[in-house]
Length: 308
Image (cartoon, rainbow, N blue to C red; front, side, top):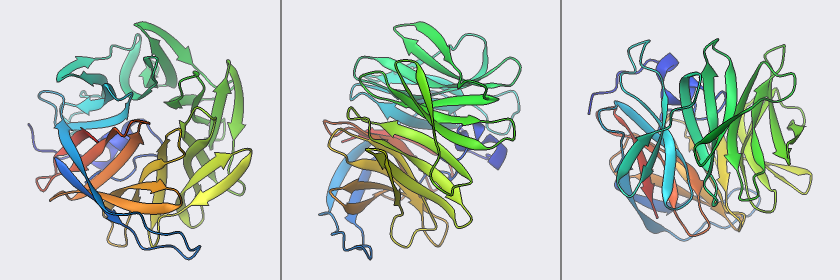
């Protein structure tokens, strides 16, 4: 594997997903550590260990997984982050086999999620450098564009085919969205300067990220009610995935700028850190306990990870 010398403009988390994965991740074994209870009185989760394995596209300098259905994991890789002609490319990982996802008419791509029926979603830049969401259903691709948007990203999908993501308006302001049966609805956290939807479960509960004057925060949208989510003492928090039990996966930055994964279950936070890594990010968890994300090793090489 090549040593990663990525500049911020080529980090896999900045290539397409505006407002998400903005911090480079920090291995094979990650300890889940109970976090301090926040002021609201939430209790910390019991510590346990998640067994992770690295998932690196062969020959790539940067790899990251964004989603899994428990069997097939999806993400993106970059061969050479220092080269302008080395774009992010979507891939799948299943039973030890890597395959490129060739999105028609695209210059770069990221596969962001896959549901239990095998429907894959993601985002790509087209030949005119416009961000376009996409779906891939058994090899049949379709483009997803929020009406009137200048750029659209699909970031999450549930087993019913409901999708969430974000879009940019004519003023370059970021808004979240949810699509049910092809009908789009904008999502804007109250008072936020930008919002992105990232994950949705079978009940239609949505998690994501919003920004305001204080920074970036996670959120839960359930029954039409927004709830902000901030990991205790974190400088920024991103919620990315939610399972059918309502458990939320994401990542946060501490006061020293290091990124950590987390799971929020039954009101209790627990940190997930890959042993020996510089930073960790958790992006999804499935109903049967599979977890994916990425980490940054001591040599500044970025790896995808999958485990349970």
